Image (cartoon, rainbow, N blue to C red; front, side, top):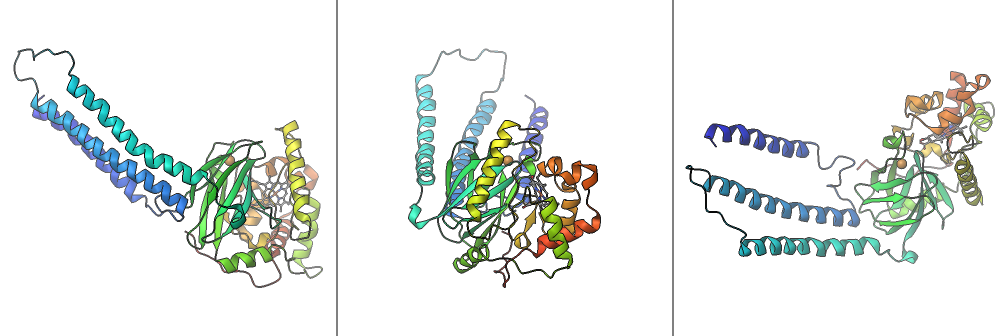
Length: 384
Ligand code: HEC
Ligand SMILES: [Cu+2]
């Protein structure tokens, strides 16, 4: 091979390798969904394992590529003579069988240990138990011991083991909080378990990681990690009724409209005693309906909107929750998220005599934003 040809092959190759390297660095190892910015022991373990295998692979890459480059240069064709013709080389063959086997063992030991560590659940008595249920296209969170139910926002205290029981009430989804723990599938009729723990307070991003239909990429959630005291406050909040409304106020008008147009799908009073079991019964009835008719069943599962005024986001983690985005959503969920069951089934979009005026939409949005406990709310945290 001529020097010119060598240049033609190797320069583009090395340039693209460097480009790939710099691009991956440039995208930020601490972006909201980066697994490189581990913020809990499970994510840390997974990251350490990844880096260990990665650097080992880098070493193997340079050794093997180096040998190839060396051999192709050292033994390049110099004249017309045929090289010595050999058949097999026992020493070499033994070496390239034994060496990789050793490398595989070196990788297998910490991997299997890691699997054990993440699969063995912490002591239930000392942990927080959460049931997380995947729905097209949002996440439900239940606290069976506290009898609290909420949607698209998982609240946990810092530095405490949390056992998440994971299921689905339609298709297969996947539960993933990149900075706190790796993913596990949410499967209908089968419970998976994951334990997580977050090092410090903040707001973390979660995401469905299994293709589950048209809005799959738009199925997200937030994890609010509280200090220990704030977590107690949050639980109390979830049992406290919202502030009373002035009769005749816009919010109160919104309340009536909500009861008439939205409450057949959305529960918004789960702060009441015994509301928890009712809501779970509701959701499982809806699931039965869905199983009978997946396409057209008008009875669909919908996110619980209790204390919606305190929620950070709408559309399952898509947009910040405020008057503008919320009105936009109620006017037409398609504005924010395609394919929702709300758009497909709510009468306000599908029957000519039930459309809402923009004034009515505004009143409903104001009502939803007024839904928060009648007391000073807990600390707001920053995004991680
Ligand atoms: C036919 C059932 C149905 C009706 C009726 C309905 N919704 Fe929904 N709603 C849903 C479903 C399903 C979702 C989840 C959509 C998604 O994220 O894919 C949803 C989501 C929402 C969300 C976002 C919640 C979150 O945490 O992201 C809000 C807010 C909302 N609906 C408000 C309303 C209002 C206000 C009305 C009445 C004007 C209404 N909905 C009527 C089914 C319904
Ligand atoms: Cu999903």
